[in-house]
Length: 145
Image: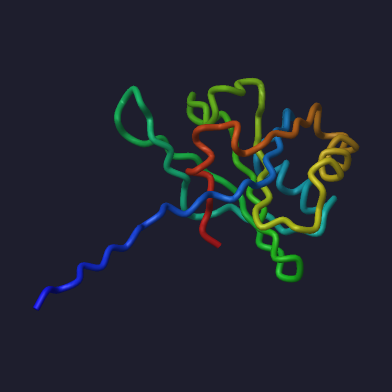
C-alpha cells in the first residue's frame, strides 16, 4: 500500500498598508498628544510597552515609546511615535520629521483630510503624508490592539 504524501504551502501574510503621516512640531510628545486629543475625537495614552526596532550597527534593538488610541466606534487604531529619541532615529530616511502618526484599519478617514486638519493646528509646523510601503521598517510598526 502506497501512502499519499500531502503537501501544504505556507504563505507569509501580507502586511496591509496603513496611513502614515509625518508631523513637524516643537512640542514634546505628551503635549502633542494632548493637542491631538483636544482637536480630534481621540484619547491618546502613553503605551507601557516600547517598539523594538532592529539596529543594524549594534545588532541589538532600539526602543521607542509611543502613544496609542483605539477608537471604539470607528475601529481605527491610532499611534503617535516620536522619530527622534535618545539620539536615535526611528526612520533615518526622514530626519526632519519629529513624529509619525499612523492610522491602522482606517476605512473612514481620508489621509488627505487628516493632513489638512493637522495643518490647521497652531502647534504644528508642517505635515507630510507617506505611504507605509515606502519604509523598510514599516513591518515593525504593526501594533497589537
